[in-house]
Length: 190
Image (cartoon, rainbow, N blue to C red; front, top):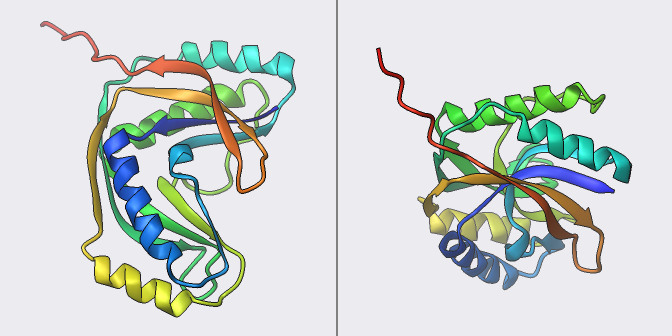
């Protein structure tokens, strides 16, 4: 089963991103656009894991120390690995250290199950599209520059999820397998 751990985004931001994708689609280009309903902030990609290991993953994620809800802003855009040789068009994520700490906690707890750690540093983003060819890229870049400063809005993340990714024509479909709330830690009194 192909799985990943991610934070979902709010519906109003999803709708704004849908509008941006609709505008970008008007530019003839060789880009496979993300489905707005599938947009998420990946904390950890697990890849293919046996079904019997999914229950272990669920239990390990449940055992993570409590993390507080976190403010997240969706702003800015760019290309991976770089603008000169782009393969992915993304929207940026701005958040405090809590998001990075949550991703590190997920990484560490799942490493105990033998799930390999990432080689790259955590780089939170939303994938808008996967670039298959370079036709239309100058026009896409220009359209994005016209949108600057690109700000899709902010929301407070109150939970994260374990997802299953199911390949489908037109892009993968995602199904939530488990929910993990982000709770406000109890106040410490002295």
